Amino acid sequence: MDTEALGGTLLSTVPFARTLGIEFLRVTPAGSGVSAVVRLPDRDDLHNHVGGPHAGALFALGDTASGAVVMATFADQFGRAVPLVVGAGVAYHKLARGRVTATATLHDDPATVVAALDAGERPEFSVDVEITREDGAVVATMSITWTLRPN
Image (tube, rainbow, N blue to C red):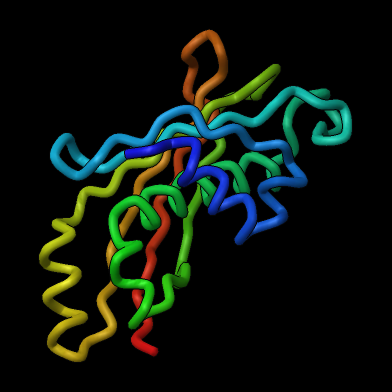
């Protein structure tokens, strides 16, 4: 999986992620369990009132990581379906400081999702995200539900 190419495509498709300065570190292909790792820089303009990344910036980081997983897994289906987020939940656990990293993982079987699309359905699937500080502490967790809406 070419992480740089995928990151470039996602940043050109979703300019807000580019505005935040999100960096794409790694995308792991399906054989290993699809996952993506992205990082948010530590910038004053992204901070909240306590000096860490704003909750909205953390949410956008997790959403971007999940989008990278969706692109890596289902890009070959985008000619016939549009990926859309249909729901998301986030829990903030600790104060974030400095750069933070989001790791997103697809747990649903991609073949099952594509089979539902083949059957004329609008499949839904989940991507889980863990956001950590540089010291490894988990600052937030997310679950994002996606669909592939047939064209």
